[in-house]
Amino acid sequence: SYIERVEAAAGGQVQLSIRMKNTIEAQGYQFDLYLPEGITVVQDEDDEFMVDKGDRCTKKHTIGFSYTDGHYVCMLYSTAKNPLSGNSGDILTITLKADGNVAPGAKTGSFRNVSLSKTDATGPTYDEFSFGITVKGADGIADVF
Image (cartoon, rainbow, N blue to C red; front, side, top):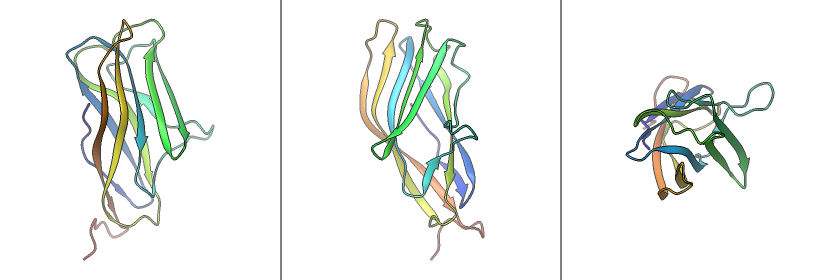
């Protein structure tokens, strides 16, 4: 999996795209998401988290996403054991929000307990990997010196 650094203005929203290059035929993906203080996953008017399937998902892929014990938990899986299409590209997009009072600058989030599932329910696991979020202040500046 890989995630490009994203930028958000304080009080603004940004799309965090999760991309994956894989050599195995994967049908599922799960992880725990830890965000820095002041950064949250946006919820819609029905209190559903704004997490969308990427281009590599089929109609049979389903997303489970919740918040518990100070972090988010995500599971993407196929109800019909359909593999993700292709071997490279977007699998999920998560809409994040930077609180209006979050300090400008570079922040770090992390994915932990990452598992990739093959159609036979086996697959590799990874402990943790980090990604960057740059928050800009109202004046458009990311760092205050």
